[in-house]
Length: 364
Image 1 (cartoon, one colour):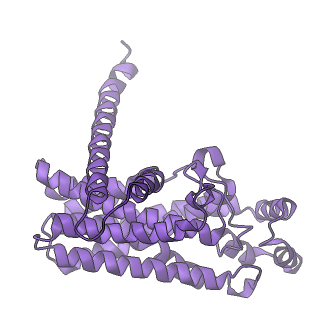
Image 2 (tube, rainbow, N blue to C red; image 1 turned 90 degrees about the horizontal axis):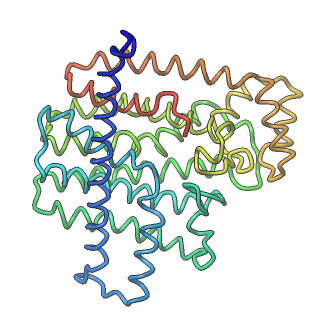
Image 3 (cartoon, rainbow, N blue to C red; image 1 turned 120 degrees about the vertical axis):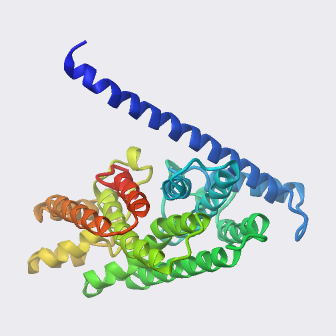
């Protein structure tokens, strides 16, 4: 065996062990989903299912909740392991899985309604739930049902826990923040109207902060901190500040991939241009465009015509927005690493670094 191959062997073995652990963790996580689903479908304390409503709910859950990458939910378990610095008990793993699924349920609720509002076509490589022929706008109520499931799961599994009230408050707060971010997004870009004067960076950052960063990044870590018994409010605030920055970086990536990502890789057909979205790309384009280029954007942006979409993308290329994004990604990573290193708690540093590693230079 060559020296180079010998040197690579331990690294490959370590990578294999990490992958095996990751697969085992995902398998356990999916087992907990089946348990939670069964509990909800047999819950007769408040409602009495008919055979039809139970079958509908089960199909809706399987279609809308577990089909994504599950990064948000799995991050609760991963973060708790790093914070505890010791093997987790079965009870701790289960509790982390339950909270992870509460976040995935919340994500399902947001996406079901978001797809309707955006007239999206596909989600996670399949038609959006509302586009399934028998579903249509019944999906609005299904989204509400998903939302109510979160509080039901929390009540079932944490009612006797000392952190129950805190969990309710943080989930309620994050839902409020996310809905407010969605509202700002929608009123900034109303259907059929294009007011490019509204597409400025402060507005974009505010939308991203509330619509994405809190529930995708802060919520999983806050859940893990609560499970770990953390009571220092300063730790929560420090984590929040960095994770909101990370969430902004993540959303910029998402906007970039909506335009430049391959649908078969990212699992959806990007529609930000047709939907008149206040995306990072259009904000950057407007900052750099001359008057004739701004005129083109005003005429073509927000049109559900593929020739118009192509012209907008061509202008993005002329303005070298791919290079601008690469510079942004590098600078964001450098700043986040520096901010993480300033944290006094080594365990919290590990948690924050693990989040950053998952999203840096992602392709989907």
